[in-house]
Amino acid sequence: MQLEAALGNLVAYAIAHLELDPRDATYAYNRLMDLTGAPPCAPPMAEQCTDALPDGVLGEILRALPAGYDGATIRERLMDAVMLRPSEFEARFWAEYAKSPACATAWAYRYATASDYVKASAVAKNLTWTAENGVEITINLSKPEKNNADLQKQLDVKSLAYPRCTICRENEGFERAGFSRRNLRTVTLRLAGEEWFWQFSPYAYFNEHGIAVDSVHAPMKLDEKTVPRLFDFVDLFPHYFIGNNAPLPRVGGSILMHDHFQGGGAVLPMQRAKVRIPLKSARYHVKAGVLDWYNTALRLEGGREEVAALAFEICSAWKTYRDDAASIVPFTGETPHNTASCIAEKRGDVYILNIILRNNRTSEAHPGGIFHAHAEHHHIKSESIGLIEAMGRFILPARLKRQLKTLCDLLTGEAEALTDDMALFAPTAERLLAEGRMTPAAAEARVRREVEETCVQILRDTAVFKRENTAGLLAFLSAAGLVP
Image: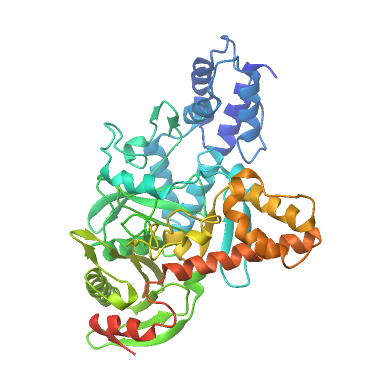
């Protein structure tokens, strides 16, 4: 296909899916010609476009381009040329919000996929399944694996000049070498009286997965405004959940230098967990309990102000709590170790807050973290166990697609040895081989079960109070004003 015709098809796609006004079709086509160096000619507009995603029309253009174009960067530039401007996008969002919050987010998510910001085609290739033990497994083929040491260094690295980090709002429409956010669109929010904004995640860990980001570039924190911000968000979007990543390395998220929350239109496994130990507060009329979950998690339910106040008291007590017998030490010098993730939901007039207690301390026996995935599990997951994993949805590295296939081949006899990059799998392979040769179906089921059991054990590793240490947990809860 000639380049001019491919550009005409993109204009038709934008009219069908990106709300490009037909009055602007010629203007958009002229911009596309300028971006691609196409020879000047009258726009050969297609009459209609039935494609739901832009991969086809973008592929036509990329194949027609002369050599020398950066395919990844030009995709964003092309889409930006035919998209609504940020102000127009935001106006359309709030027009849909007038119908309902769910209409607004559904419209925005469809727009994010149609504009190629959310890589829907790539996300669809991820391997995903739900285990009998309740955890959800995703082998994410579109997300790079990150090293915990690199995440730790983020706190010491000076910010970029502009934008200061990869989630600052100034990224909207920005591009530099090897990085482009030309097709990013965001929505302004007011949380606890401050300006934040919402955008969807290109990795899409679950339905309508996105982040709420502070408009001010400031480090992640857990303070008296955290829960009120979360509750303001679920007041705006009661069909979503929202939570803060713990603001410390190893137990937090992958971006620690800029305060943000994660959430979206999913119900994750921890949200479905029942209460194991009912609790009561002497000061607040709040329904509370310890969750029947693998890590140490609490649930509070009730009116907004009382839940927020009790949550702040619990988090404040936890930040300084010490239990040497359980290896819980709140500080090394002035370096903090105790922190928490808070996850908000709203059902009718009831505010629900799940609190996951975390500690990021290391030891000689566990240099990667006492309450982190222990070394024997690093072949499956070595990155930070952040909010989403702590809630039971594991985002595992793309390398596992190949490595688990090799492990299956070893169990069936199709492979004779592990590949060089699978040394960490040797203990697992030896143990599974002792069970005898397997059919391909049996090997796949056994390897999947091994992954599921490892993920559950990782969650148990992150528990600051182990299941058998109920007495220790109750001692902390008493210090925080809660009793059975």
